[in-house]
Every structure is written in structure tokens, then in C-alpha cells.
Amino acid sequence: MATQGDSLRPFSMEGEARTPVLLKVEAALDYPNALARVAQYVLENPKRAVRQSLGELSAASQSGQATIFRLCRELGFKGFTDFKLALAAEIGQREPDPDRGISLTVNSFDDVVSLIHRSVLGTRQLLQPELITSTAQQLLNARHVNIYGSGDSGLGGDVLFHRLRRIGIPVRPYANVGYAHEAAGAMTREDAAIAVSQSGASPDTVEFLRRAHQVGAFSVAITCHPKSSLAKVSDVVLQMARVPQPGLSEQMIGMPRIVFIAEALAIAIADHIKATESASATN
Image (tube, rainbow, N blue to C red; front, side, top):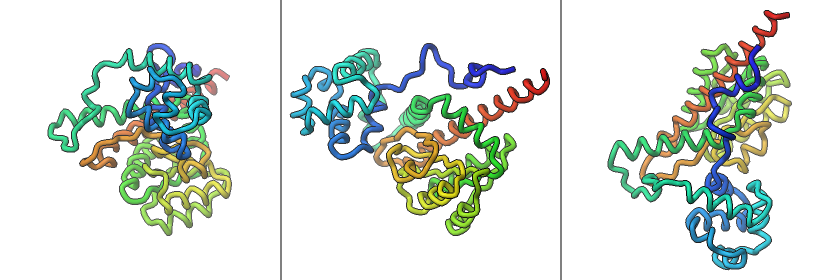
């Protein structure tokens, strides 16, 4: 019988997988204004923030000290000192990163490769293996799985559809918003819905998942913004990393994120099937 460790093998890394501090801070850009203002300052001035006192950071970010302390707690740290120590350790370990500070004109294939690498690696660091495993089990047990994404995000939905169908999930993609909303309203607690939206703010996509969630279907949001409207009407948020690169199509450069998520779900589903079959064979 497969163990829990076996089911998490595609995500195993040396030591405990932890989300990098700056990646956590980047996700905080979706927080309320005051918190987001601190996060923006830290992202733009990480080395300076490490050297600043609570009062100095408060003045520099134009935010109250209580706001800074709250942000540290929201990011999973005990307090400001704990946050600074973690940030200092991360900055000290980081090698020069040619990806940061890329010019507005990306003029080499290597730059594109770097951006794609960052998008996939960042997404891996944001996704917890346990969350992928539990989501995979829910999809495997669902009577039907409906997928919707509007515009360019619909391409991500297509990727998920083809990968999940190959692993045996009864999945149905919807390109037409009217049909998608109708299907969502007809779902039951035995079904599951997956909504893909990079911004998490697409009204059609939010409405699709809201209807599915309202009738009790297992609802999954795949987005870059964990505090978005889409996330608020979901049971699970699979967060993609942001890909800040002016002048390029973010959706196209970021498409490998969806490929990674689809493959991760498929592997977790396959592992669960093997574990179930093994358990049945020994009984």
C-alpha cells in the first residue's frame, strides 16, 4: 500500500519545502491597501527593509507600525523580528538573479526561458503537496468535473481538461459562458467545478464558480490572487505565481504554470488510484 510519502513524491525536495519570504510578500499585494503598501515597499527594497527598524520601515512605507506587525503575522511569522531574520537569511542565500530587473524589451530566448522557469518554480513553491493530494482525491470521487475559464484563461482550462481526461476523470470543459453558468447551476454535491482566472476577477468566471459553490459542488479556483473574488467563492485555491514581464503576453509565458498544476493533479490522482488498488488487493 502506498504511503503518504509516496503520494507526495513529485513534490519532494531536500528538507522541508517552504515558501520563500519574498514570494509570500508578493502574494500580499492583494491585501488591503495599508498592508499592500508595506509589501510593495519590501519587494522593491528588501535589503533596505532588513536593516530598518520598525519605526524606520513604518516611515519609509508610509504605514503604521501595527500594520507592519499585522502583515508579518499574516505571512506566518511571529512578529517583525522573526520576519526580518527570515528575509535576511533568504537574501543572503540568493545568488545574483538575472531575471530581476529585466528590461521592458526582452530580446533573447534565454530571457523567455528564465521567465517560464520562474513561473513554474514560483507556482511549485506556492502549492502545498497536501492541498494537491486532497484536491486530486475530491476530483477522483466527483461524478462530473466542470471546467471554465474566460478569454485567455480558457486555454488553461483546455490544458486541464485534456490532462484530467487522460487520467480517467469525467471532465467537461465549457467555452460558452451561458452554457457554463447553466451547467454550474445544475451541479450537485457529488460534482466538482474548476475555474481558471489569472486575475481572479473575471465576472463570468466568478459567477460560474459562485453558482457551483452555492449548490455544494466542490469548487476549485486556479488564480494568481488568493484574496480575489474568485477565491472567496471556492473551497480550494491553487495559486499560480505571478509573471511580471512588461511587453510580453503574461498568459502565454505563464501557461506552463497550468501545465504543471495539471500534471501535479494527474500524478496525485494516479497515486491515489494505485494506493486504493493495493489496499483492495491485500484485503
